Image 1 (spheres, rainbow, N blue to C red):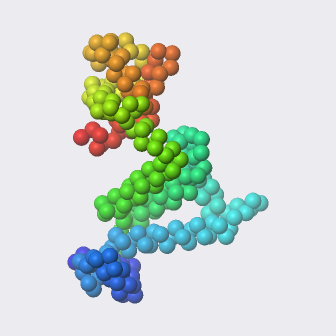
Image 2: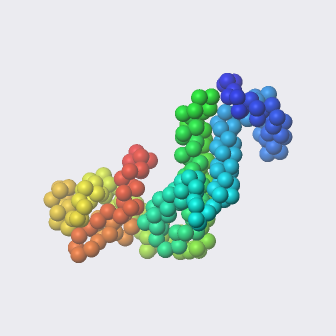
Image 3: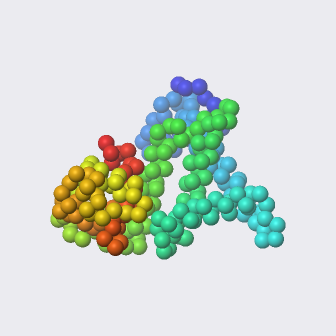
Length: 243
């Protein structure tokens, strides 16, 4: 058993029995009966408690005339995340700001907690960022289905479902041939002829791939010039997509 942190030992002493009972209710056995609450879980609980105190303090100190430091911090964070959300989601982004703010604060505080002596960063444990990712995945797709119904699923496979495998191969070729990278490096975009010269592919082949990428949402076109979209940027930056 790993050495318990002070806060972990406190939780196990006073709430260990409750934790064991909850685990038994779902058919699970703790790895250590005398310490069912692990350090990462304890640090997550601590982060949640700190955030609860922070948000309550901000709510209690809200003032139009004399905003305090906590209010300035909360407003600056909300404004930053709102700007990012507006750029990514566009119309209707306001509904999802609270979740983005909370998950952002949770990850930030979880990372910073490891800098404090006697504590650990819960996000250093792979299960914690995985849990955040799964929660965000469910949240994202739930609202996608809620708003767009069955049309939400269609957007992942393009206008024709039978073309989904072809769209996947086109996206892979756009990445592997360096077309996405070439467009990413060109702030003013590239024509199909310019792309063909850079990647050593025939103009016809490049045009077919560029149009497939535009249909898949990886690219956009304006005045015969192609530009990388945010989806295309994510495809290039995603380590899983590159493996």
